[in-house]
Image (tube, rainbow over all chains, first blue to last red; front, side, top):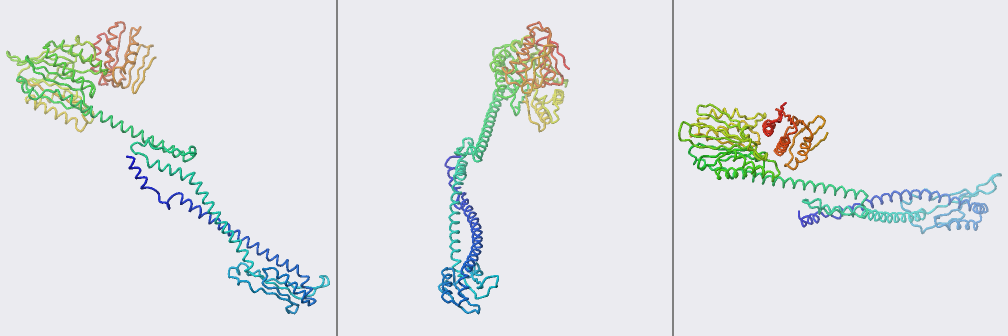
Length: 514
Length: 114
């Protein structure tokens, strides 16, 4: 994938602000800190409220006790002046809404009321309404002799006034809480941003720039200060993953290249095998023999070889099988074809000499190739005869598969060629191992040459086609033309193989004496 | 006892009972890869009047291997100082024709099929 493409992807996937990590962290932190602050503030306010109530109650009662003496004195003596002093003294507290001093008949001796106080709301009344009224009985005389009730001092506190300071504290608490929440949120967001969000964004940017064709070359981000933590581990794991992907891709590419190369090599091998085969016209031009040929390369092209070369004195026929498969086998086969033709052009009739030179040529070239390839090779030299009953003479030389001959009366002859030669290209000198068999051919005699692809063709149960079945089939069709015999054999071998893969080349040469 | 071991094959030379055993499947690529085995085979002939090459466990031998074995037999033939026995198996397809060819290279070779 190209760079502009991944850039477009990055732009397209930019996260909207509201969905961003930073925003969500900020929102969540703010909410949590606010809630916690609210809870803590409520608890603080509640405990404040409780202690404030207790304190007001205690303080008011203490104050009343403090003025008990003068108040009782004033009530006892009906001293209006003193009473007024006491009431005024109490009234100096700005929480006091009303101060009343009564005698023991309930008559007011002195009273002060504050009128300017704002009317208390329901909440204020709820919070402090129950602690506004206080009163003490005024007693005169000492306790052991018995004290007399001389009157009563009553005060009423202004709930609004008490609440005002409480409200003040509440407001401060809320304000401080809010500021605290904001500051904590900001800190958390900042810390998160620098510790997590920013490196994550860098990682994300790096991931979006990965080229799927070359994951190993991804811009691995270096997150400063995160080499040892989880983020560093993520980058490390991701890098390992990318490198593994890269190796996988390279392996796949190599396998594909190798397959392409092998495929190309197979095509070349197949071409090599077919390129020098004799044409139908060449075969038809040979009057003394009815000839049919067949060659089918295996899926992995082998090194089968056959050739039919017409020359002044007759026909030279070669059939062979280079060991192994592929290009090298094909090359050895080409060299063999060329060497056989060269020896023919040089008019070499001596089969021992032909085989020896051929072997030497192939052996030395195979040594150069360093591959140890060799081949079975049978060479047949045919001459027409013009006097006597026999119409042709065949000389057979070289080690290859057995030659099948079916006489015109249906009699089958199998000629083992093992002792007629040696694998070509295997050892330096083969002259001493080369032999020759001569036989005469009469009209309608059939000679069948083949490679082991035919006899060793296996069916699904790994049973081989075999020489016997081949010979039997030729015997059954020996009255037919070479072409018909060939077709019958090919059809029968194909039937035997069934759906199995063809593992070796199939080569067949049928000669029928006209 | 001297051994060579590779992917799917093993070569054991036992100088005590004068035998060298090749087992497994030999599919080395080219003559040069057979050089160590070739060398061990030739070494096993040194100063020995008899040698048995046991191929009964050699399921597969490619053409380079057969070429190596042929070279070894020719070497043994040319030295004339060591009686060579090759043991093969009828159950292994490649051995029939190839071992008979070895016998033709060195008629004095004793070929034993199990």
